[in-house]
Image (cartoon, rainbow, N blue to C red):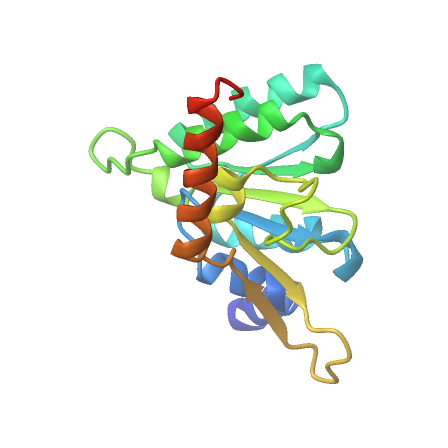
Length: 189
């Protein structure tokens, strides 16, 4: 009975959600698209397997954005999971604060034994290109640390695909840095 229940539960988790979890750690935002199916049931089933709670927050107003930041802090302490939807409506400032908070987290098993269980799930309505630099949904700091999972299109087996933001070529960065120095010297920046 126990084995069949475990098998049934693992089948209820979407493959790309399972892979996102397996390839993540507590400081890494996990991004998924609602176009690949509603991930909430899968996330809740996976959280139940791991002994975690899931906090679902829609990022559609400033009050909820503050709630998301508060629950992020609580989740990091308790090992709870935070599931954010409507990220397209959230302010860039809130996304930057989330990214900064995750970036500065130090796993500390003695003080916070459940911190390693924490996961931040961010759902978007449509597919996202993490390498998009024109009007991106997520700021660079967040997208550089994020893992994006989705179902491969036209895949008969429903295989999942994980994506990370590509590293910037050093020549491009040095060119941008030189332009910025030039603008600063001219008093334009």
